[in-house]
Image (tube, rainbow, N blue to C red; front, side, top):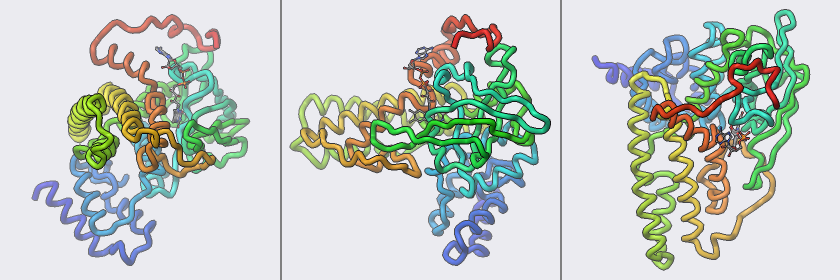
Length: 394
Ligand SMILES: Cc1cc2nc3c(=O)[nH]c(=O)nc-3n(C[C@H](O)[C@H](O)[C@H](O)COP(=O)(O)OP(=O)(O)OC[C@H]3O[C@@H](n4cnc5c(N)ncnc54)[C@H](O)[C@@H]3O)c2cc1C
């Protein structure tokens, strides 16, 4: 029996015992995890069966067709897309046991405490300090742009533990409980009117050494695993042809012949081709991941392309809508549980797309990554990389 046939049999056996119509959603998700049918490429005992990642899509489809509940992937994007692969790669067995199951089921939502007011593109300059105190670390500092911190129970956190070492070497990675005293989450309002993200202040926050991920001082390497996975999660998701923004704009074009002009037609044709090339490239990237390879700089290239096309398409949609394109639905401040990239109106899509070239690494920084690591061009001059962090001008 092939892996695929064996998996189909396991799904059928699981559904015969756990009928989604009569099992409470959380119990059903926990049982699915325990059966190794959560993410089949994860190891046995951690929600998987150690099978190729390429088999996951069919498992998800079979469960969805049977009416199985989902694990809130849009609310827990950071947990599923970034924290989980990082914990899998660098966590101890005890950490994997503690965190992966409630993360996958959606019982625990995660956020990302990386960026700071003085450390965004230059994340390695971060200044949030973690000082060892017995079996705990005491953390002080400020993070910013933290998406979903208002909903999160846990955070992936990078903090400075060795200020005497050079900036990339003195960082340690922690799993931080968001309920700890000393964590204050304040909303930041965006151009859309919503407050998806936050400032997070950490004052004498105590984190057990048990929740340190990897070795002290190895945080930069671990953070790069997180960031590579983030770029793939944002830009590298394979979609059907004419899905997403291009689908919305193409539909608008077909349904409203009165809005067409030669110039808009030209723009649409160009963007349609670019969106299709990007889609085919994302399939190649997905095949690479399915073959068990780590996401590398290709994820940066995909994310760069995604940001450019999505901004151009959302602008074209406003043009197509003529004077109506200038209206904006509702600017009341809301605290959305999940990020709406596409599901709201044209005005919201246009404004939200502005963040696409900033979140997960700005387009300028991703161009540097592609230039240096894909094209092999000379590196940007970096004068501070060998200086102790405490001597850097900040
Ligand atoms: C919607 C959204 C959600 C986000 N969610 C999170 C989150 O959950 N957690 C988190 O930690 N962060 C989050 N971020 C933060 C994001 O990662 C940072 O905004 C981003 O890394 C840029 O950092 P910065 O804002 O400090 O800009 P800066 O680094 O100050 O950059 C300012 C400008 O200078 C340019 N620049 C900087 N350095 C260079 C260089 N070397 N070469 C060329 N140009 C350069 C940049 O491209 C940019 O245009 C989010 C951001 C957005 C927009």
